[in-house]
Amino acid sequence: MNDVQWHDLLRVIDGKLVDPMPVGLIIDSPWLPNWAGVSILDYFHDPDVWLQANLRAIRQFKRICFLPGFWSEYGMCTEPSAFGAKCVWWEDTFPTVEKTLFQYDDIDHLTKPDCRTNGLLPFVLKRLVNARAAIEQAGHQIRFAVARGPLNIASYLLGHTELMLGVKTHPEKIHQLLSLVTEFLVDWIDLQAKTFDSIDGIFLLDDLIGFLGGNDYDEFVVPYFKAVFESQNVSVRFLHNDAHGRVTAKYLSEIGVNLFNFSFEHSFAEMRELAGESVVLLGNIPPRDVLAAGTPDDVRASVVESMKEIKDRRRIIISCGGGGPPGASTENLVALGEGADLIGANSRNCLCNLADDNP
Image (cartoon, rainbow, N blue to C red; front, top):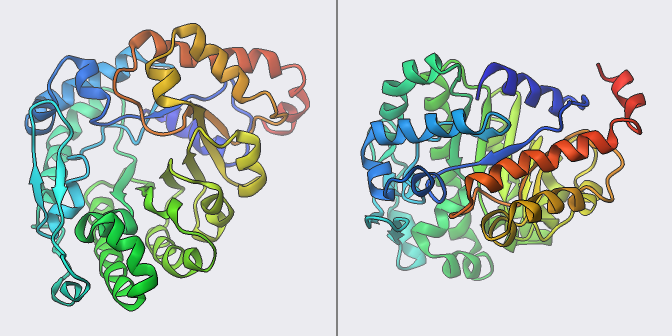
């Protein structure tokens, strides 16, 4: 993310009206390697392939602010690997993780990993350290400490079904697991922030939180996410959850989130009502059916349609309801920006009073 994009993001978070309409997109291994013409395995194992793919993207799509920008990751293997999870790799398919906990009592034997030495984490940092000069030469900075969220990581260690069932059948064990994972995440976020003084944001990704509600959300989500987001004094606290987002939206302010990427199945209007006025909403184009499988005209039309019920376009960034999908073409990503330009042009006159109030 370059300085202009970063300052525009901060202005959006502050409630300023930014013209042209801001466009952002989460990009990582599901989209970037194949778009760049390389295999997923080459993208992961070869630092130069990874760097060149990211550089090509920022040069090709100057209209889009990529989030988090130069994301150093190994898919879902990144954090679970530090706990000893077995990672399974293929040439051009996303890697997967095998669970390490086979019964709830196994949690008693789990210890907090050292994020400086365990699993793939040292490779994540080393890739960024070695690429930092080239990233900065391209006019960009490493802005975010990035990690999967507590429930996401716990689900890969214990199993998705087992984690959800355990909330009801073994709540003390689940708290024990989430507490340990959260302590690890606070360490991991802190190590990233200490390694790169340019970091001023935290980005957590967790879809599992979308499957809890009511008292379970209060008990098993809020305290752990709040602990991670409050662990650093940063300007941007970014959460991705493109599963069921209604419950999450109501808790964003309490958790400390000020930028939220949610499912395309929820409208901007619905999310604004649930999240309140203080949270930036990042969305809301269908990733697979429109951004990947649609035509450029479909993308532009979807952007315009998504903003139909929105009178105040402050604290909104045009994106898709999730991460950049596999197969999204260059033409469709260009159309994403073109659709945002249509929104800016259509709303400029009726929002001129807001612009006057927010220079």
